[in-house]
Image 1 (cartoon, helix red, strand yellow):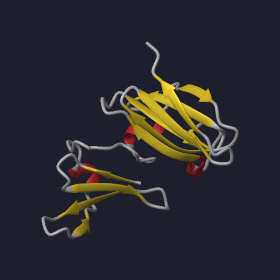
Image 2: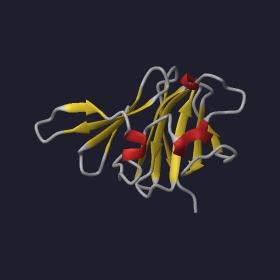
Image 3: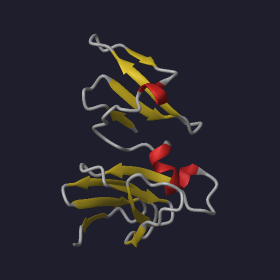
Image 4: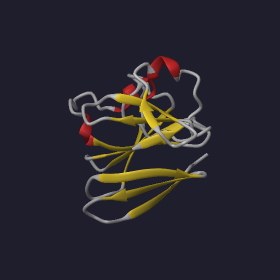
Length: 142
């Protein structure tokens, strides 16, 4: 997944070796990695929030899970108040943003197998299941 900054001049991505990487994008469309990206982007406003690694999502991993590949997707809502994850354990979990260690999520189960994607759209959250090939629409309750 890739997150773009609100001004489209920065990107961030997760690498396969569990790193959070930052990128600068020039007017000409050239991309270069920013090795000091964590400190250079502290005040950057991100248009999307899909990273599995970073300060704001350290609490999304279950205590007994050592490998990060069990979390398939992360998404944030537009208000930046919630994060949702889809995992290999058939769960859709919703956290307050930032999801720091010890943050207790709401956990919902509706899929028969792993959750392949989650995305917010207004006050709804959509999730897709892998083996069951279903799309579930979750509505925010007041």
